[in-house]
Amino acid sequence: MIDHQTGYQIDHMIYADNAATTQMSEKAKKVMIDLMDQTWGNPSSLYSTGQKAKEVLEEARSRVAQVIGATPREIVFTSGGSEADNQALLTAAELGKKSGKKHIVSTAFEHHAILNTVKKLERDGFEVTLLDVHEDGIVRPEEVVAALRGDTCLVTVMYANNEIGTIQPIREIGRICRERKVLFHTDAVQAVGHIPVDVSADNVDMLSASAHKFHGPKGVGFLYVKQGVRPASLIEGGAQERGRRAGTENVAGIAAMATALEEAVANMADNAARMTKLRDRIIDGLSKIPHSALNGAAEHRLPGNVNFCFEGIEGESLLLLLDDKGIEASSGSACTSGSLDPSHVLLAIGRVHDVAHGSLRLSIGETITEEEADYIVRAVKDVVAQLRSFSPVWRDLTEGKRPFIL
Ligand SMILES: *Cc1c(COP(=O)(O)O)cnc(C)c1O
Image (cartoon, rainbow, N blue to C red):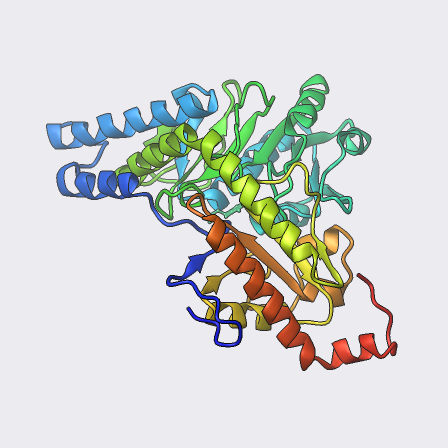
């Protein structure tokens, strides 16, 4: 990719949308292909082809459990993060119905897998308190305490936000829930494989994860459910997953997930250190663009997440021009792109509509280099300047016809 105006160049595409999905690791891919070739039996079958698959499946369960500090019986394999989130909420709702507790506490900036499921529960007679999120993108434990009621059956707060990368005080919220004997779930899809997660130290009762966010395959994930809590089944059918999730297991995908997870955790400290440095280099560079702002606190942030608002431009146009320059990024979550509404996460942290529309999320990968980080900064600066040069909104702002917000 050559920028003809400035002459700077890079000879490959830069994928900076790892919060939407990641490329499979070579190791995980190989495990998956080998298993599809050789271990294709049905794990529920009693003959050896089936039992071989069963062994692989149970070994994967132990490996996944080990990484997050759980026991194998506490892991339910699912089709991904969305399913795990749905199952966690259904589990809490079923328990709540039995005990007459029908109040749920969550936050305004959860993933839609949570938000739309709590909405459904609301139509089902549950009451939901969505906590406001502060400008820094961090939920306050004391506000969780204040929201708890005698009939609260669940608190669900995401581990790290998928758009602005802010890491929540999960351990503290978990401690509070445990004291009050309220079930606590966390959507840890952006955290697992990226930052240390330990279900017992973090005091969580349920936790969702998804393989394709840590270089595993798409369509595979898991729900951790603490021993003593009986998971409700979303999918009725056979007795797979000890009756908690019917359907013949995706053995190859599940084993590839275990491999990707172990690999991510083995390299986590090194990767996080390097990415954090380059993330901050990009944040420093982009902060120099006038009338821009970082979304979410710089502290307590995922190592790979950069999210900015630039006043006077449209995020969508920004993405198209960046793609021309070889940079693949996002303006919000992949799930909402294509809709005209600005990101609910940016609105939740208090960005007004106009500003929220001019957002850019760069979620860099583990292999990012200093040269790429610098290229990204230069390219974004150029594209923002270019878009502003023909933006009527920007003209009004600079001519004082409307006030700058940032
Ligand atoms: C990606 C994502 C999900 C959904 O996971 P899938 O495996 O794509 O269903 C849920 N929550 C968060 C925070 C995510 O980033």
